[in-house]
Image 1 (cartoon, one colour):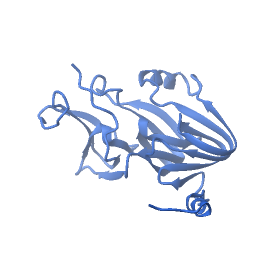
Image 2 (tube, one colour):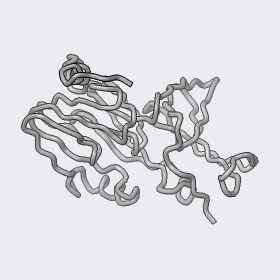
Image 3 (cartoon, rainbow, N blue to C red):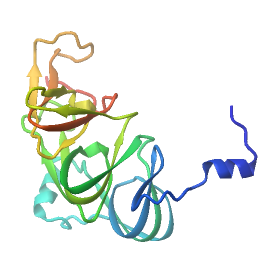
Image 4 (spheres, rainbow, N blue to C red):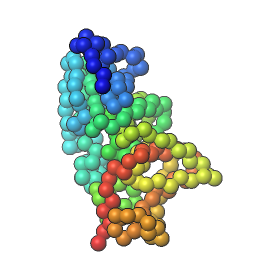
Length: 230
């Protein structure tokens, strides 16, 4: 067990300026936002801040009626807080590991549970995978982020990125799927022949099928409990 004097503890655990830009990984599981303007964050993710920062929950009509209706369908699954001002903002989400992705006129899909923050310059929209109603508890919604700017995502433990090619499609457990490249449109596949999953009720296994050219990010953890229908 490590033992420190007060000065040694402060030196070992103190905040460090890394010069990485607006989003910095202050620790593996904590994001530092060097705020000078506005960013969008997952509601409830703020753990501390320094400076003059104002927090506002997104307005019902702030992003237009289209997103409002989608949020109603997904059960407020993507609830955002707007942070505005100048200072340092620290974000975390249940001790999950944080990764920062810098988009350069690119797009990425992120599972709604795994989106921590993104810069104001990023455009976003809520997407819902087809055929999911009644198959998974809480549904399976995701957020498409596109443009130029930083996006912070979270994973339980270390993420693994798999390349998708026309010759090598990738099949994943939806509960362990975190993100994928914006050009991919995964299909949902139910394989009733797999009977070996203990505790999965009817034995059906729901899979996401990624085909084409791109990538998919997974985590070694199933984030949503599967609930088969009666």
